[in-house]
Every structure is written in C-alpha cells, then in structure tokens.
Length: 118
Image 1 (tube, rainbow, N blue to C red):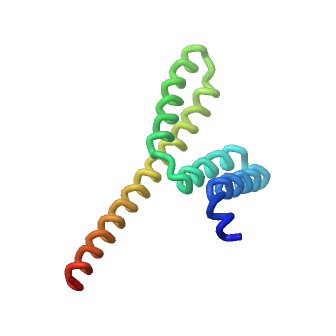
Image 2 (cartoon, helix red, strand yellow):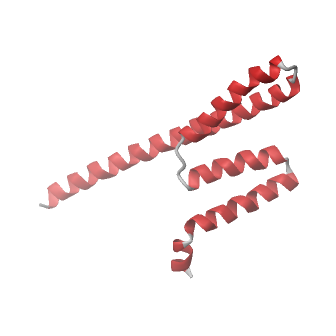
Image 3 (tube, one colour):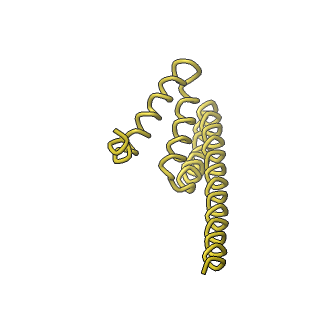
C-alpha cells in the first residue's frame, strides 16, 4: 500500500486539497477554500513561487480597468484576491529559501563528516 501511495503522491495531494477545499467551503467560505487549497498545493507540489506572484500582478493590472468602467466592488474584490496571492507567493519564497539553507547545511555537514572519516 505504501509503494502504491508513493507512486501516486501527486494524486493523493490533489485529493487532499480538494477535501480541504470542500471542508473550508462548507464551514467557512469559498474564498478561504480556494486560497488555502492553492497554498497547500503550491507547498506540496513545490509550485514555483512566481506563479502566485504573477497571478497577483495580473489581478492588480485588471483593477484599474474595472475602476474605469465603474465596477468598484469588483475592483475591490480583485484587489483583495491579489493580496492573498501576493501573501502566498511571499510565503512560498520564504519556504524555498529555508529549504535551500537547510540543504546547504546538510551538504556542508556531510562534507565535514566525509573528511573526518577519510
């Protein structure tokens, strides 16, 4: 069973994200479900942190257009969504940074260990 789960790791992540999204959608709100699911998928599938940042910039570019055509409430909603995606992108960048720092420490430690034993 473990080998099967390992081979289907991404499928398990997607199913988990969908279940969490449904849970949040029913208990909290649809917005929370989408934002948290996107963050978890980005974290688990190691999506490049530039993706949510690019989505945020696109949303911010659409906001002035909506304001010009007098769609103020839609522009406000898109601005809030842009903030969510900016936050997700920054958090994913921080996690990538911490992973790279931990990887460098591990590689340095293994070099020190191989020198002391050799």
